[in-house]
Amino acid sequence: MANQDRGRARMTAALGNHRRIEIIRLLRQEPDLCLEDIAHRCKVTLSTACEHVRRLHEVGMVKKKSKGRRVLLSATKRASALLRSIDLLWDATAG
Image (tube, rainbow, N blue to C red):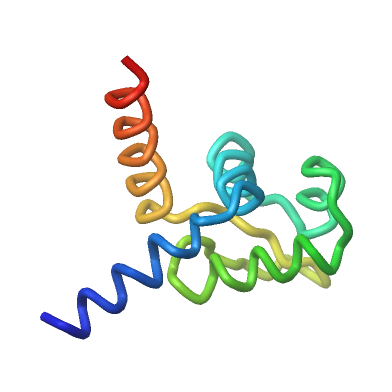
């Protein structure tokens, strides 16, 4: 159980940054974006986008798919479920 709790802590920590939440929202709306698209739409540098996506991928929130020379990124079901939970908590405490 302790190992599962550590994994859960890493997963929730990955969304502890507003840019990573923004990236997950973007990938839920527009799956199969490349890193350059994410950087452009989130108005961050390519290296910043790369670091955020790397952290999200490490905890299973972003999946990668190769298409030719490009790597397309999408949010996983895990990321969508966690983001929905965060939104529900936010809405519950806003009232």
